[in-house]
Length: 129
Image (cartoon, rainbow, N blue to C red; front, top):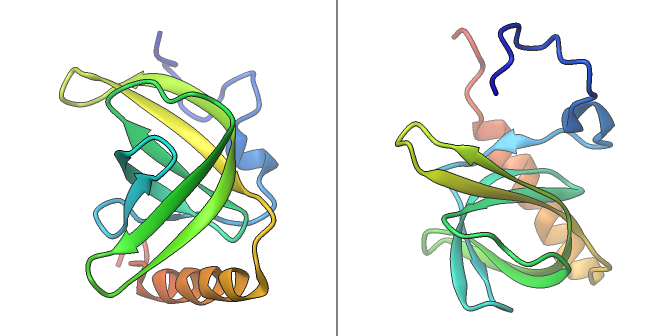
C-alpha cells in the first residue's frame, strides 16, 4: 500500500540511520554478485555500503561483489546484506532491492572506494540546477 503523504511515515526510514551519505549511481555503475554469478543494478553507493536491484530475490548473507564503471575501473568488495525489500517498478514488475554494508577491506580497497565515492559525488548533478 502506498503512503498518501510521502515523508510522513510513522516508521523510521533507512536514510535516517545511515552514517554516511549515499549518492545515486543508477546507470553509472554496474554490479556483479561474484558469489552468485549474477549481474545486478547498483542503485546507490556510500563510504559505508551500497544497494543493488535484481529481478529475483537475493539470498541474505555475505557476498563478493564487483562494482564497475564501464571499462574505466572495477573493484571487488566483500559485503554483507543488511536489508531487503520487494517493490513494484514503473514497468509493473517486482524489483528486489538489497542493501549491503562493506565488510573488512584491505587499505587499498578502502582507498579505491573513497576515491571512487568522491569522484562520483563530484559528478553528481545538483538538484534544481
